[in-house]
Amino acid sequence: MRLRYAFWEIITMNDDKNKKSIQDKLANIKYNCDSKSHLILDQEKCKNCKEKTCTFICPANVYEYNEQLDEITVVYENCLECGACKLVCEKKSIEWHWPKASCGVVFKNS
Ligand code: SF4
Ligand code: SF4
Image (tube, rainbow, N blue to C red; front, side):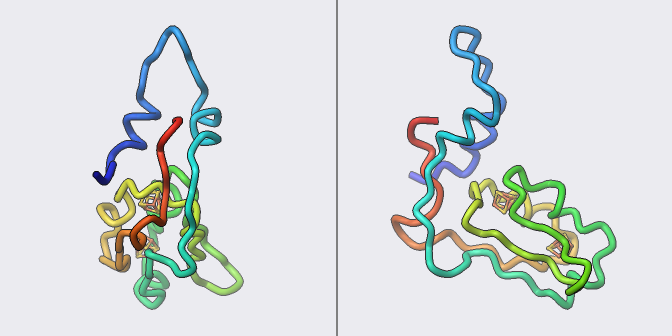
């Protein structure tokens, strides 16, 4: 079963007996990286996007604005598959797919 919102559960978990920092929790997340990105942007739409909300909403810092190239770089390998970027992108620039079977983030041991 896909754990679409598992990341949010991890960072909001309040376990007094075994408190871990967000960094500790992120360090326990494993990835089986796909060879191609499951996140595809329409860079033309992104050029006209003033807010660039994706660059600060993503909990894994997948998106970064490259001023020299005037485009958004996408480090899809770090994606936690929470879906937040797709929800907040006002220009509907993000073509969002699940990583192919057996690829993507693995929350086991978090
Ligand atoms: S919020 Fe959407 S349109 Fe704006 S930069 Fe990010 S992906 Fe592009
Ligand atoms: S789904 Fe989007 S917001 Fe969530 S971790 Fe992946 S790139 Fe970041």
